[in-house]
Length: 289
Image (cartoon, rainbow, N blue to C red):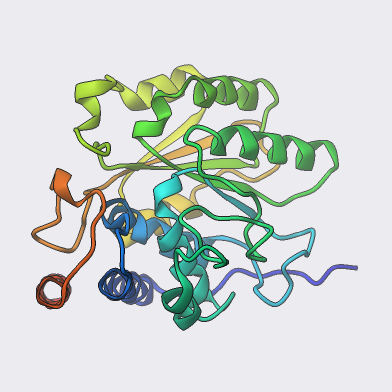
């Protein structure tokens, strides 16, 4: 019999501290790496990753293939490095290994995740719009085989302009996949523009409701709201898939990056790194006061 997997025990305050640590590690890696890191979208999704890996998902870094584990599919391709660091903080591997090899040709930590290179990654992804179709298929397999775990995916709002997303949303509803949960990093920015300028997604929550999904809307940077949203998810054996729409800010935590189209991706010299770390620290201090 497989070992039962339990979720991590963490308070909202502890999760907030872990989110801060995740952002700090992101900035330090951006300062170390000799190339562009997709820092803007990494910072906007950091709280979601913290929620999933440090509170929500039934996963055990020491028992990677336990059939009872929850599955996670990263659809938001440019957030791979944030996922790597979140996994390292959860104990899958060492953060220093990411810093030392990130982005190299032979690295397990590529610009997009590869399940062949990195144990613990469920699916190799990168092409936008592919995550929800893959997660839907995994959830359908679990349902047909009497398995009780959940399948999670994280999407960026920009990629939900892809037709494959809505085909999958229909398929998930049609197959009663209550074991499927999609988180959306709704930061309203694309690579070079704001999302509503290119694809008019609003009324966004209503679109998901029209496709038969349970919709939860939260402030994606309010850990208490994120925890409450997770705790209110329907039972995996229910018949309605859930989407958690997280209202976020691209570049969250660094004043000169927030909502700045120039910081979709970039690198930090020593001066900018210290400026970014200082901004992050000041924001955390203000939040605690």
